[in-house]
Image (cartoon, rainbow, N blue to C red):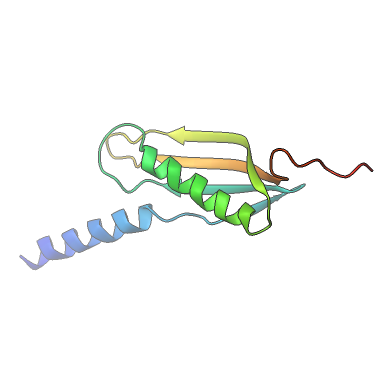
Length: 103
C-alpha cells in the first residue's frame, strides 16, 4: 500500500512540474522565448497551454509599454507517454498605430 502511495505522489509531482513555464528568456537582439510543458493528460494540442504562453508574453511586453510580435511558435501535441508543449519566440514592439521615430 505504501508503494502505491509513493508512486501516486511521484506521478502527481511530475504532472505539476510538467506545467511550469520557463519564464521569459532573453535570446538577443530584443528577442525572447517562453517554453511551457502541458500537464494535461490526453492526446493532442492543449489550446489553454498555448494561451497561457501568450498571456505571459503579453504581460512581459505590456510592462515595457509594448506589444507582442510573434517570431515563431512551436506546438508539440501530447501523446502516449509524452506531455505536449508550446514554445514561443517573440519580440516586444511598439503598439500598432504608433510610429517609430525616424533615425
